[in-house]
Length: 62
Image 1 (tube, rainbow, N blue to C red):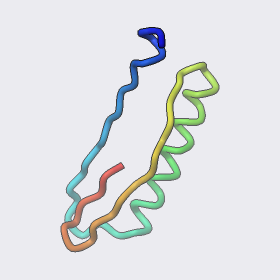
Image 2 (image 1 turned 90 degrees about the vertical axis):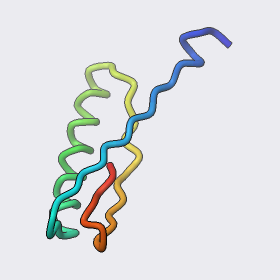
Image 3 (image 1 turned 60 degrees about the vertical axis):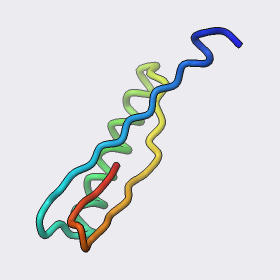
Image 4 (image 1 turned 60 degrees about the horizontal axis):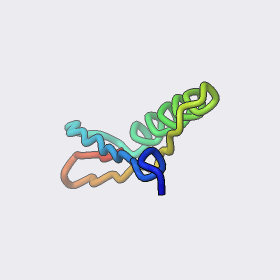
C-alpha cells in the first residue's frame, strides 16, 4: 500500500451548549452535510460520519 493511500485523518468536534435542543443539532447537521458535499465537489476527499447528541450533558459531537 502506498503512503498516501494509508494516510487517513479523523476529526471529532465536541460542543457544549447549555439548553441545546435536538432541532438545533439537526439544523447544524444539515449545514455540515451541505458543506461536506460542496467540499467533495471541489475534490476534497471528505466523509461526514454523523452526530451524537447527549441531552443530559448538553453536548453534541459531530
